[in-house]
Amino acid sequence: ATLGDLSGLGINLSATKDGGGASMVDGTVEYNGSKVYKDSKLCNILFCREAVKRWGTGDDNNKISVRSFNPGFIPSSGLFRAPREDNWFGATAFTLVAGLVGFAVPVEVGGARLAYMATASDDEVPNGSYYSGDTKSRATCKADGFDQASISIEASDDALSTKLWDRSMEVVGL
Image (spheres, rainbow, N blue to C red):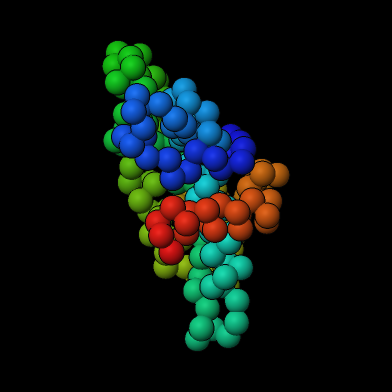
């Protein structure tokens, strides 16, 4: 995933005469479902990092705990809809095989990971951290192996997190 210069953020596709214009965050026109998915994950991590800078410091009474996480690959959720629309049979077969082989996790595991991230103390899950499980893991908490993980170089880019935040504020009129 790469967000480029964020030139695709906030473009109103219906406002252009032919519907042309960027459809991707990086400003490219051609839609790519896989890239949309990856870019959205990258944006979530960048937003988390920027929120920590803006709201996650200070005394315990005035800070907000912000965390990001990977719930796991959950093709049985509605979020795997683009591949299903493109190739229903292939996507359905892939979902079945992914579950049998073990690299997909059930919706319940993703939900339990979300609940853990939302309720764990800052001592257990530090503010600003990113958590993930191993590919075949069903762990839903730190004690079971759902633990802090590394992020990409682009996700670690402080200037990009600030630029994404500021551009998003402009897009929504704040």
